Image (cartoon, rainbow over all chains, first blue to last red; front, top):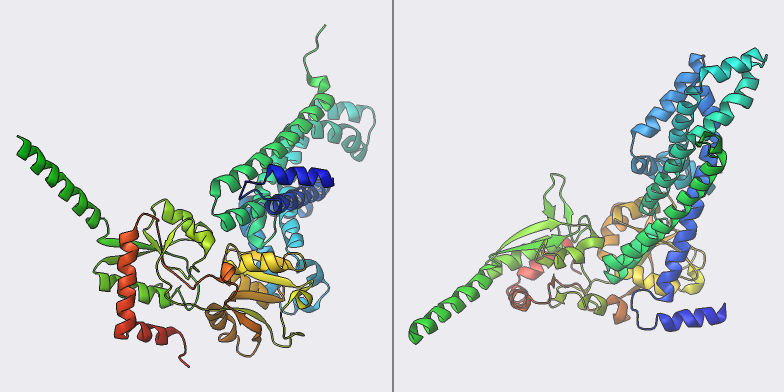
Length: 243
Length: 255
């Protein structure tokens, strides 16, 4: 590790912008971005499953509140949601004295809440679309076997619907990665925050932003590859048969 | 024939030089608002402040008309270099890093930077020990940002804001423990408006020069030396004839 650092230092010796210090800013930014996006996607995904099922419910009191939630969070810019959650909570009187402030004080948690609510709304709609498009034949066959609605949902509808939702969900993951770039407006030093820091310090927009764009491209490529692999495995039964 | 050629060449040269002088019948000046009391808007949206008044007086003295163009701080130098405007007059501290990019006028004011904290803060000296685990607020890309990053980046958390307003809001909501900013700005946004709640901690800083520079200057593109010279001369005149003191008294208490 030590020798790697010295090697890096000699490589960067005549570079005034990409010093070890700025590279460590980018490194920390990468960690923050990945944490933020990964956590919000996981929590959002877990929340979206029951929400998507509820969204297709016959009961109005389940269906409409979920619709209202997804409508609001898909119908407003993420930046506005982030501002409202980060700066808005401050205007709740006496919030600084409650236990909530411990988690809301740090910008990471408000950003995580905003991102999670946003991605959960989109994911809910993606899953609901997939659930709705399950072929009637499969459901009737399940009924004919004597499965209850709950069992049909668990064994038939959800497994096939989630497979069909996979390509659309892969896009949502990439969108979320790109949307996370706005986290820097609430002082989080994510990848974009690091790029803006370097830009403002060295007045070098091209170097700062091209470098960060390359990192985002690598991340996007990794996500694409992961989902292609997953699709190949899970959607194998939809591929044309050969041989 | 030779004469005609010489004459027409001379004519071309005169035309070219007068075209260059005409370039700046109007000077567009980039400014980032709000940054009270240096530059901000009145309730009806008019730009005002020390920089604006002094800038207009300078333009009048030179005999050019001024147009103010509002531009966010972190893109203000690239904006100058890409010719969106011809000068920057926006509380910009003269320092060596910036000198590589732009040409500065003589300094027109030298305000110190100061630490601001809520009243009842538990220390009265600012150093690495007292700042340990504190959250410091600075405006991104400012000299205060550079200073704090280099001096206390290892011991304290630094939150960087796009505007001074966001920073003050987070100070009021207790997300920040201490702010580091230009004294005049902190005075008008924290000391004057939240009477009694905030105090200046420790010494005000104007040293070391590698961070705090030589005061605020007007920035021009490197090649506009003539324009910078005109502003320097005008500044000299305004200092001599009392106009400068009059504008200064308008925004800073004279003690």
